[in-house]
Image 1 (cartoon, one colour):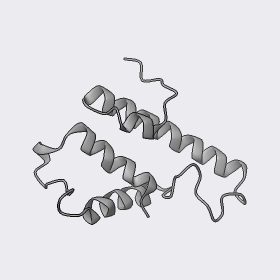
Image 2: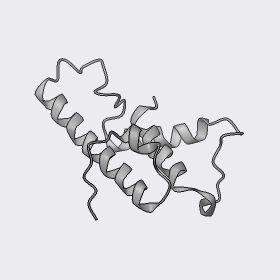
Image 3: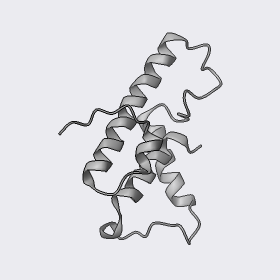
Image 4: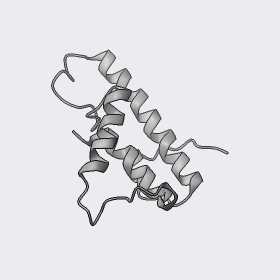
Length: 103
């Protein structure tokens, strides 16, 4: 299966509806994270106090912590229930995307 795409993670997030579209989203998120690393290495002074293309959490630890914090901070009417069997592919994608942007 070909996961190459020029679509951004935010564009692909809107299209997540099944396993294949979730995988395309994750691959794009990973590719974008690699690009952020390259940009920061090329010009660390430029990104000392600002995010790179919306990435607020550059380490895997910060990324996962932000994903968890976003999920915990959702209001009850939007909260994803703790029953993992009820998660949709889109809801899982939203949790991962939050790791990028949530502070």
